[in-house]
Image 1: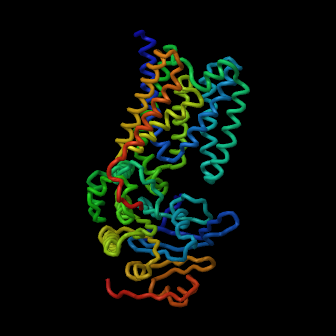
Image 2: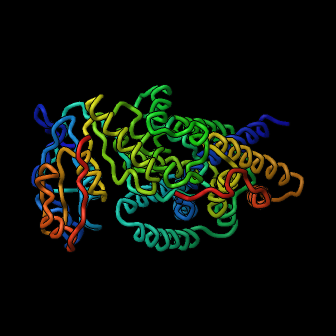
Length: 239
Length: 263
């Protein structure tokens, strides 16, 4: 994850990061900082490089530029929708146990994570291929929370989750951020979530990038430029 | 029962345990095709070893390690390229190998020998079994995270690329372990069929390990025993027993799968 470390106060510093697939430049000299304990939302249309950015941040993709994480960073990662075979005989418990074993966490830590995402232990005992979309997403968030992460990277974590579940999960992540000082990087298509929870927003679209506080950055003109069409949105007041 | 028979039985059981465990991850990682094709690459190694008058399994191991390195190198590129390379290179290996090896030796290399081993071969084989079982047990959590999501594995501190290489090398060793017993064409099935049977029946990871090992050991021991009675080579009989278990598993519908939604 880079030899340099982010300076005090920042969980992550990204400078001039570019990623190229063949001749297509997906990310072009992207620079931003994420203060410790803050929440960064990453938005942009499909194909704008949001997931690619996450993969570059964790060192899974070759890239130009520098990515600096704070010393002692432990990342909890929630990947975008996974293609799991229906008959894969790996239960939610197997998955949680594997994460706990690899990160040196206790089984109590795993049970706590299940509680935090409101997933019933009987659901965790089922094989992951048989879980509903929403149950599986909750499990992924629980797995990300095992091992005392300092940073959460969430790639559309509430995709397929019912509305009440989305609310619970967003609130849980927000509570962990406030209470345990977690830094959150969140890819989302839901602008109301961005306005409500994000300290900063990073918008990605070919040829465009913006960064700043949601209310000042996401102007109607910027949203239209990003999505190529006027975007209706509703700002939630109060947290 | 002589000491050699006991040693042979121990190695048959050990090969079954190792192939069953390694096969579980090969099947879950959806590398059935690669696994089966990789075993073919042993043939030119065996042919060269026979020409050079060294132990054929040594030639097979060398070729398998090279094959594993090749699959690993190509896997880092695109999926399509992996399948193409496997299709071309490993079929070529089989063709070259069958030109280098002829007659009785070719048949033994392809379908396995008598299942009789020297005490040194048995001892080395059992050490390799212990190494393979030890690896799978120690790496099982890392392998599970990697097969579900390489990103989760990587951010949990796992060197995914190194783990993939280690797994391929252990798979190659498992193939090598069964080479003289089942031959180049059949050893892949001993890793794949019991694990595929277990995948259909098991509801959890430990369940899958258990079922795969039982099916694999039943196949190796029953096949070897039947070979003695029928005066046949054990290899094909071992695979037939494993296949029978798989066919039986098709008749069994495991619980908890109706009405569930795919994520």
